[in-house]
Length: 201
Length: 201
Image (tube, rainbow over all chains, first blue to last red):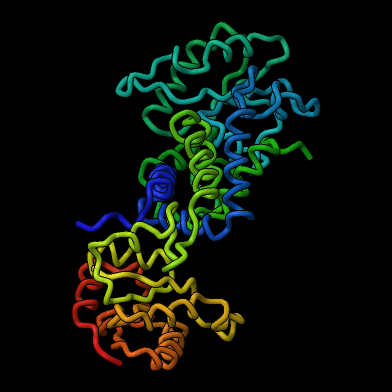
């Protein structure tokens, strides 16, 4: 058998790129070739940015958001509403809500969902700090913005029980038809929920 | 307007990831979050692998393949057939032919295709060295394995004209390569068949 045409340094790079979500083995090769063509403009800056972010970006000690400052920029923003705390599964969900301009208060990032099947229990998530924050006098409302999945709803149920000791309103995102969504393509559960919680114009 | 929830180090990382083929702005964010969760296992090794490959991987001075040794592993492999030289557009095409086991000889990587519209002329490609190699006494055949696109065929035509002075057989991959198809995306069977039925110009 002839030797591989791909040397060890390049093969290691391809193997690591292939681990990223959205890149498979073949697109990892394409990405490696692209990077080698753009050494100065992309490859070397990317190596530095990865190393720099790996060293500097930490979880915020208040909310769990990822930032290079602690408290993070969201927690440090004095213009944000301190009375409403929005609980999300992950930093990506925080970004999605910010992109939508959907929430002007603070956040709390759990870092996952309760999942007995995967062995993820309350101690594996950022829940203790959430209860503390909910009990702070400035907190009036906790919005539980978790996915409508089994694990999401299990986690939401657990949180509502354990937040009872804090005197706050506990709310959740409403369920319904997505904006721009066609009824024909929606699952029955969503349609039934949207009908049940219908509102007057 | 509230400040961005994404700090500068993280934003720079996302912007660079988004430049890679196969990743858009949204999947770059997902990739950044994934990497931050896998700092030790993926993110830091990837930073090192990028830096290492950027420093060590160079174009082979004989064929243009990318490797950390020069001559590259393919050129240095004494078991390969020195009489057949396969001309490809890019290193990705070399990998594709190797993956298919379609060619047991040497390669010559042009580094692109002639493209008058994009201002890419013969001097921008690794053509001079190809003519030299074709004139070496051990070379008996040059297989032109370029895409069935306008630029690919223009380049093939230019090469056959300029290889006339070398006393070698000039062949091309047989039809079977889909018109407009790129080598890198082809299945191994088609590539192997096309190589087996290569014909003289």
